[in-house]
Image 1 (tube, rainbow, N blue to C red):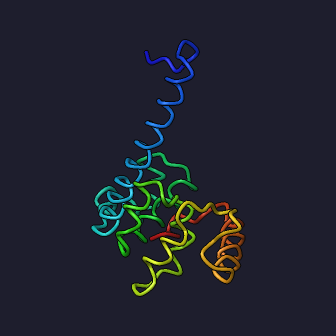
Image 2 (image 1 turned 90 degrees about the vertical axis):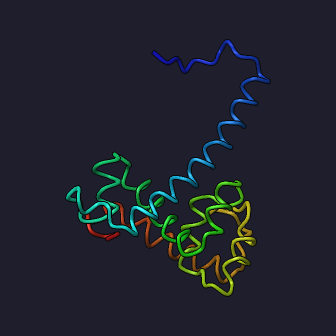
Length: 155
């Protein structure tokens, strides 16, 4: 049985462990996005009887609706703009940031927007531009009202 009590560890060990696991988590997240993107592109959910990647992630992988939605949106954006994979793995871009940027990314400006969003949070007042910030905030408010996504929403 695994134990999750860390009371016996020194402060230095806890700090080091937290930093290491956070780094590992981002790399794992980027790899997970790559697998979701490929799974989605190949429609590998169909042989298992699921109508969409979203339904597969929730039903077969037991992801929460929110987590499945965010990872699929980020994975689809990263498939179109592979710099997102690296930005997530290198802790420059969060999943929320990738999801917020996705609707605005085009080939000509994607690299610039990803750089501008580096180390920004969703609530940051320092998004890449004021107009993008206003648009993203409106988009976030709209999408946060959709608490229960229909099964085929992300098909």
